[in-house]
Length: 91
Image (tube, rainbow, N blue to C red; front, side, top):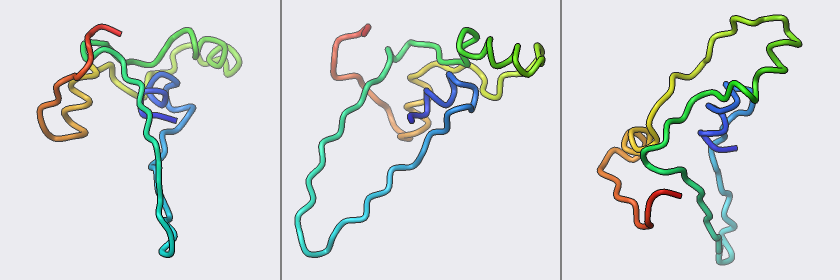
């Protein structure tokens, strides 16, 4: 799962590192596919996705594990440099 899904689910679904074990005796090919929100999008735990879970646990005051953030700020922190979108916004 992606980092945004971990935040949206308030940690219920974990983001994982992608590791590849390449075979030394052959070529490796891969196709990467990414889906990102608008750079101006605010990402935060989704109340609607967590409502039933909170009722089942009888914990109405469960705090969000992740603060809300703007997606562009997240990308800048992950990549450590200026990121310019190559497609038209918004999507």
